[in-house]
Image (cartoon, rainbow, N blue to C red; front, top):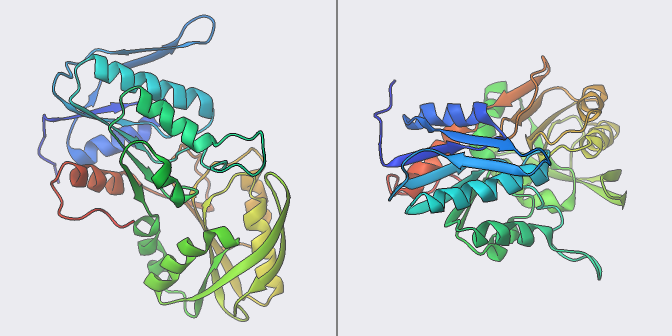
Length: 312
């Protein structure tokens, strides 16, 4: 079905995920505005917006996926350029918000990286931000601008329900993800478990024990991201040792290192599901769920065209 063109929306794609931006443009029934994003000889980013944005409601899609520093800086430059071009309001659609893992000072001398990134975007004129499955949802209160935090349930629940798996237990791979797992379990009328673990060094996790009844049950691990794949692989192994008959995995953001996917493929996992919140290479065993429909709903809500926010 063709969506009627709404000329009051101006949608701009950053350089991080053009394919997702084009998908969102189709969902909204609007064209992508021309945006030139290049670099000077010394590597400095160079941005040019050629459209007439005077009085426009501008939406910039730019996940801060690797290389995170470049994506974040280019997003800041796009926001400033849109302001200079006369935009009435600028909203950043950041499906994956980087720097959210170091959201608090663990010891003296550490920055609060997420707050720094958010203040940078606010300083160049960002009015609103929408992001998906933020690593630390409590960060909403630290953002200088209004932020819409989208949960991942609306993305993944249809796929999980289509599996027809019986006697399901939803598993958080650590204590920090329990609220996410609880939301999934409630929607699926499933059991709940958590893998207790210790993290000896950054990006390394050692699973210790499974808390919850998983014996002879199908288990679904849910997490916000897979970076090295170690957390999810260790959780899958712990669940199988605890007697789970099968283990599946869902993670929203495929922030995967070169070895991460192979680590997940080698783990005792059945279905592996992620989203296209950041660019991800297709693989026969990796199911990739579109985020454009949820982002389009978010835009319509922010414009007052929907009475309630998408599921968060």
